[in-house]
Length: 112
Length: 111
Image (cartoon, rainbow over all chains, first blue to last red; front, side, top):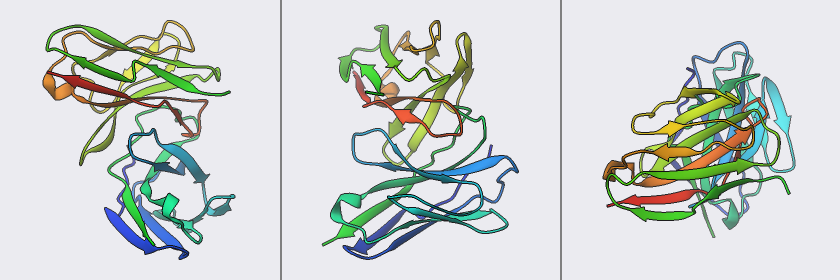
């Protein structure tokens, strides 16, 4: 089971770019990297997923180096509504629900 | 609207009184899971199911049971709840690739 390590918390001012790095040294060849966002008392919400290099969507970018032992979630110009806990997960192509490890995530606080 | 629903959303019960939390998804997903979330411990997987009649233990299965008789439903059963099962519970479903859709959560208190 590939587990991940993330910073416990981060603070950022509104309008800044935020980068959250996740370490996953034991990532397997067929594992994808997925990030979720969770607001208090709500279920996590999918943000972005990637396998290698860079992935970008309307919400965030995901940078994955060639060795894939880490990944960085980049949130451009954060706002107060981006205050949440962010989780990094690794899992296989057909992982589906197979024993995914969420951990404690990174608590991002955006300051006005 | 694609969604995962859970019932009840809030439940207060007493030790030893059997309860069931229902979970249903309308996306025809193969995979479903149950998680519990506790302060300082993050989200931990209780059980998961890869299809009808196929279930397996997650990280913290003790004290819980599940069943998957239909593709859309995945109830969580606590046959003899104890106070240490007081928690926020989430059901999730997915079609694979680890992109899961989560329900709104069930806050359970066992006294």
